[in-house]
Image 1 (cartoon, rainbow, N blue to C red):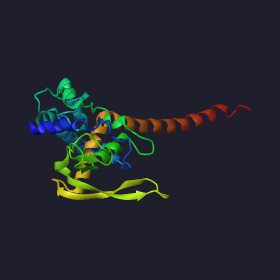
Image 2: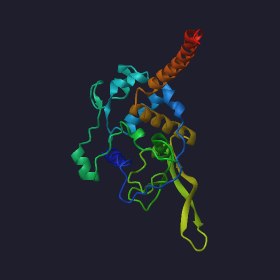
Image 3: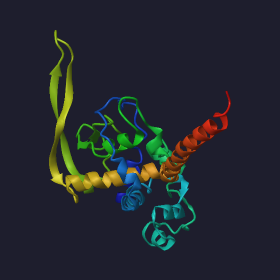
Image 4: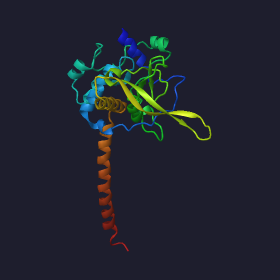
Length: 255
């Protein structure tokens, strides 16, 4: 029950809070090559089911759609379905919306298209934001949950992946504007407090896999669309050359 409550608190991550700032650190670039890495997508699906699906649902995605990333229905059933639902069912959470709203003041958002729902000019895509966000948690005793986030200041959610990443504190340095201006605190970096189950590089890879899965889930046909688009452009290029030479042949005797 304790683990469930902590996971429920995690569902507020993307809801924000009344005090949350829209500012934050610059977003890191999500390694987009993960979108075509089947193993990465499968690992991301595993992380999503274990750490996100307890509170957030993906009501526009069915479990058996994961066959598109190389999993069989038996693998999905054995490794990714824990609540007794059928493989063909939608990826819904067992959390009652009314209870969630009563406990936390809001219903955890659906994550079906979360990777496409937040982008900001000059900062990056929604995938860039989530990739940065999940790696920017730090301990902050002034917050009710004991956690804060450099990408989403005053975030309302604790760090659900802290056992993997470990705990860290943020190091800030003061910057005072000229002529007696306002003093601001700029993030300088992080200092480790306790290690996690994964090294820094391994954790970054795990987050990249999770974000890749969220990006894929928002548009499962994206990779196929891109591949098809490349072939269409190649066809049009070749057809343009053929049409140009054919037109020249038709009009060569016309004066």
